[in-house]
Every structure is written in C-alpha cells, then in structure tokens.
Amino acid sequence: MNTKSWINFSLHETECALTIFYSLLAFNEALKNKDAFHSANRNKEFWMVHNGSLWRTLFLYLGRLSDGGKDAKSFSDFNAHCIKNLSDFSKESFLKRRSDALLLNPDFLANAMFPDQTALNNLFSLASKYNGFLRAECKTIRNKVYAHAIYTEEHEYYELFKNVKYSEIENALLALWSVSKHLWSCFENARTINPIILPFSEKEEIYKSTLNILKGKV
Image 1 (cartoon, one colour):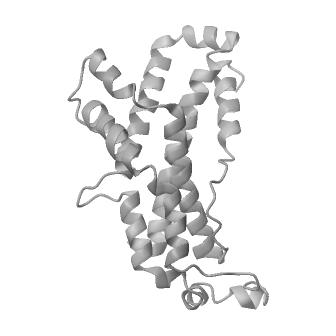
Image 2 (cartoon, rainbow, N blue to C red; image 1 turned 135 degrees about the vertical axis):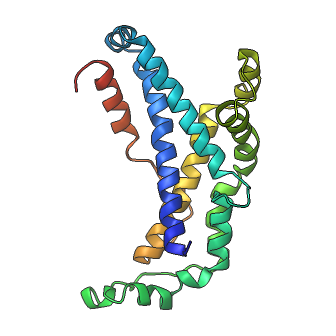
C-alpha cells in the first residue's frame, strides 16, 4: 500500500474499533435505565447475541491492530511505513498531490509545518506505549477465545479478561486513532502535527442512540 492508502486504512480500522468499543460500553450503560432494561429483557436472547458479537468484533480488531504476522497490516507496520516514506509528508510531495491548493488559496501553506522524523516519532510515541498491552492481553484473547476457540471454559475466560480494563482499551484505541487522524490532516491538508490525544466526537451520539434503541424510541 502507498502512504495515502495506509493512512486511510489505519483511520478506518481504528475508527471502527472505537465505534464498536463505545457501542459495547453504551449497551451496558443503557441497561442501567429501567425502561431500557425491561425492553431488553423481553428479547434477551437477541441482546445477548448482540453483546457477544460486539465483544468478538472488538477483540478481532484489537488483535489485528497488533498482529505481527508476515501478511498482517498492523499499526506497527503503519508506523514503519510512515517513517520509511517520510518524504511523502514533505512540502514538495504535498504540492504534487494538491497542486490546486495554492490556486484556491495563495495563503494555504502560510502556517504549515512539514514533519521531520523526530515529529513522526513523537506522534507515534502516543501509541507505542500501548504495544505491550495490545500484543499481550488483547491479542491473546483474540487468539484463544474469539479467533481459534482454544479456551472454552468460563474460568479460562476469567483468567484472561481479569487483566483487561475498559480504560486500557479506550486509552489504547484513542491513541492509535489520534495518530491516524493527525497523519490524515497532515498528509491531506498540510496541518501541523500536534501530538495530543483527540476526543472521539461520536461517543455521545453512540450512547444516546443505543439508549433510544433499547427504549424503543427509534
């Protein structure tokens, strides 16, 4: 894949994973509402399948993002590609891609700064701190529970899941998504990279719509 394809792929993967994660949280939070709980209980088999499907899909994404396989497209592969192809983030490359930018707005690049390797390393460091967590706990759950069903007993599940917290998953996914979002803005619009974690603006809408669905208001 070229750099544009890699950025779009990583952005899509991390955004989908975050959407699934917040859908899972939203479902469990919505059940605290009395009306939503009674509504879900009337068709509990469906909602049990729904909840299980979210868990399965989430860990398949988490495992894929950390997969070190030869043919995998992990976030580490994305990192390596961007560093290797640093020139794709240069002013010269940008002007070749967006030759129309200055015609539409002569001041388009007035405040632009194009990243060097240090800037990209600093950005990817937002995500690198979660490599161990993704490659250990999350990938193990993906492999032994959801992908290959090596573990089938409840006590085996418990031993794996007890080391995983919602906050750890959220922090890891927000970091990977933020890196992807920053690189998209830099590559497509020559925006200066500010290595910070970004808020996921769709979170509240996911919570609201999930509650409405459970309460039958859609």
